Image 1 (cartoon, rainbow, N blue to C red):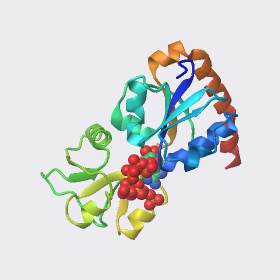
Image 2: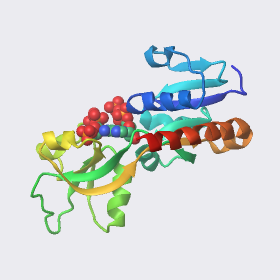
Image 3: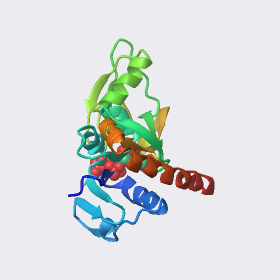
Length: 216
Ligand SMILES: Nc1ncnc2c1ncn2[C@@H]1O[C@H](COP(=O)(O)OP(=O)(O)OP(=O)(O)O)[C@@H](O)[C@H]1O
Ligand SMILES: O=P(O)(O)OC[C@H]1O[C@H](OP(=O)(O)OP(=O)(O)O)[C@H](O)[C@@H]1O
């Protein structure tokens, strides 16, 4: 393994294709096996880069521990995970937003803390704390919209993109909390030791992001 190379933590799933496209537009030569393979470590000799393919929620962990120099992670994941990493760039991909939702007509009962189901307990707790509202958090790992339907929770905090999941499950959005996009993050030590390669990456990505933004 060449230690001069940049090691990049890429999120598998939704963000992956858009992140790969951005890197290719920035001029990085990525192997065609990227999109097809089941390999979890992929190297590009011409780009001088090694990619590891991780679960989106784990990307900041790989970067914080320094096994990856940089990574691509949703702002939602960065807020939830609170890892010791620097955020370098808003890549403006995989845009969505975080919202509070409930069954129509839901009203908070006096003196009882409402139950909130979410995949993002830290993010949701700080949001409600900032609002001065006491809630009981129920951590789920997916199918969050199910919780109010079966009486597990009064409200949910979850990502909304098209709104289709809320609609099809008869839920309504009560508060829009924050917009979410994917970010380029870096390990603080890597940022000092591999400053030239990381700065070059930012310099190459910036015009591509701006161009993508104006073409939307
Ligand atoms: N509609 C959406 N739902 C969820 N995440 C979205 C959506 N649109 C964009 N995103 C971004 O994609 C990331 C999640 O990607 P993905 O759904 O592939 O991972 P995941 O939630 O860990 O998946 P799973 O647990 O289903 O494997 C989020 O962190 C968010 O930044
Ligand atoms: O507004 P929409 O376009 O409908 O997208 C939002 C839905 O997508 C995500 O779920 P995902 O598909 O990742 O499944 P999950 O429930 O297993 O997390 C998210 O948690 C919402 O449920």
